[in-house]
Amino acid sequence: MLVLTRRAGESVMIGDDVVITVLEARGDVIRLGIQAPRDVQVHREEVYRELQDANREAASPTEDAVHALTRMLEKSDPDE
Image (cartoon, rainbow, N blue to C red; front, side, top):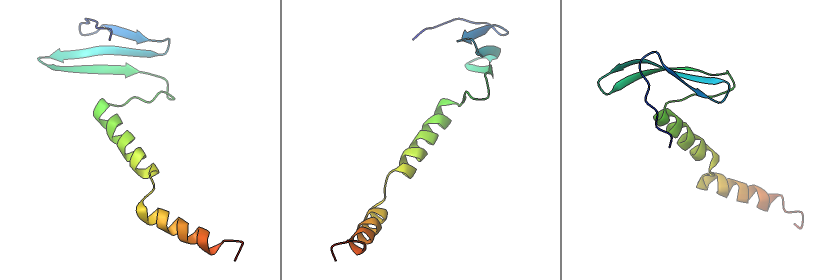
């Protein structure tokens, strides 16, 4: 992990397109401004983790869906 020290008003570049600027630092709270192209998604870590969990859950088959698919396949058996 790269660790940098920045003051309010100073920035960090990520690649050619992403600029992270320290807007304000008060105690243990830091406000950041992020400039990035529209095709670059920017999320707080906790929001990103929730999105990943929701996507994983939506993509995993439920037991009911597996049983329904099994019944559909049994009904369409060409040997019968």
